[in-house]
Length: 189
Image (cartoon, rainbow, N blue to C red):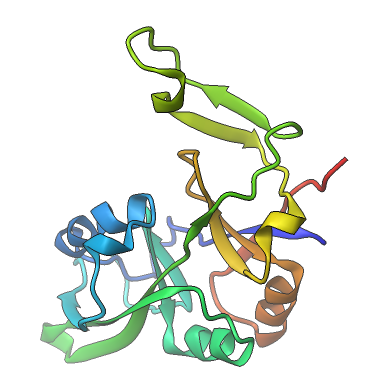
């Protein structure tokens, strides 16, 4: 099976930018998919005046992924049932704008093929080997360990990539969702 990194362009002047206060509020739970720091209560947040007024289907703010209602409906149709959703209304009061999005946070799963992936490990003589931060540079997925997940992040590494199956990639491309891009990962050897 083929896997892809799903990403959003973040330096587009026309796209809105979530307020820093919202990003800060959600960052702790989103950094390592620690759902215990998040709840499902809807939020409302002003957008930053530094951004534009276009609302694409996918946008990220740091490690925090936001999807449009249209994107969420597509994922629901594809029976993606493992994401943590939190409704968020982005507003710009001076113009009376209110756009509905979802924080859509994938879980981290242990599916990295450690033997075939390139792993960069920090050097720190004061930490035990299990405490050292690791980053996968050449990601190879163990397909068996993915199970039925269609969207996920990698466990036991600091990587922030959102990884999707080819089914998700193809459906998103067919739906012409705005600001959703893919980069193919290399397969198992």
